[in-house]
Figure 1 (cartoon, rainbow, N blue to C red):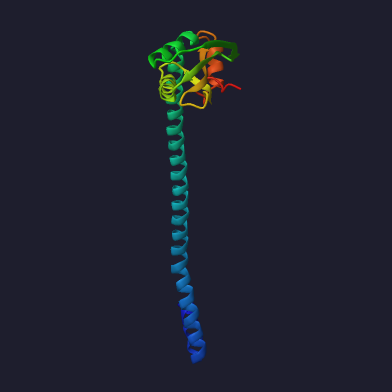
Figure 2: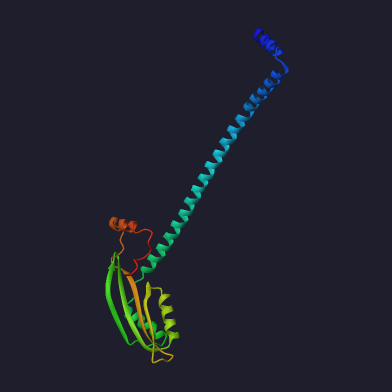
Length: 204
């Protein structure tokens, strides 16, 4: 109590200006005691929200990556399933497509075979003299939409004697598996290294 009485006595000895300053200092001190904890709490909440948002962004990126990987796997499986059906001899295949459009092949030339990894590339070139363009377009479309892994890699069209008919040279290629697909560890490791790429490499 003696200390409290001493404080009261000292306060009573203060003039009006000193009392006002002391009151202001007291108010500032109380404000600091109230505002500072609120600020610290608010800052902590803001940091937590920032971390939560960053975590949500990372989870969203992971989900997007999973979706993209699943799509790539589906595309690869679809491509590999298509390459599982070997194309018949290309000369016979092209001739059959031409016959369906009532086109006549003058010459069919097999190109040298090439091997790319586990795929074997076969190609053929065929010429069709003095033909209309409409059946040629239908033939090319039919080849591209075939269930076999075939593609047009050459299409040269020259006007025939400046008329409505043309001389056409057509190149068709296909890829076959060069080695049978097995389940041994060596093939599994090779397939793992080639993940992310569906089908054989692009021909040079």
